[in-house]
Image (cartoon, rainbow, N blue to C red; front, side, top):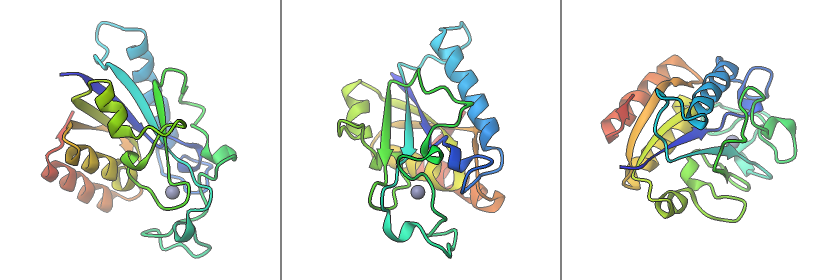
Length: 191
Ligand code: ZN
């Protein structure tokens, strides 16, 4: 068993002050950072990840994913535009320890981190397999959208998956609860 942590979309636009803020986003950035720091320092009680990677919503022109009149289901306010501060990792989260960052959604909506690739074009699933990863923990923003889609794809791709609900923030309580049930149904564990 070789485990990696996938940190989903902990970006300025998804945190307080961003264009599509999720309540608790900045706190999640802080808490994920603390976990990653403990892992990096190899503290005795830190998780034994072989790698820690992150995903980013990374839009140039994602078509109908952006809207002036968003329905907050399939269309959203402009967010995570490439080259803006909104696309950057939240300052509470130091990206330095990440072994790889997977960018998604340049020209279309992309909720799952598994739709993302490194700047060199390596997709997430390929990268994980190339690094002998069998198990993944998933955390980040938002529980009911990109975390959900990433967890479901990780299960589909054959990884053993654990959700870290204490390190996730959701858009709405009802949809987050439904997403949790769906992820568990699909075979994800909860740590
Ligand atoms: Zn997006």
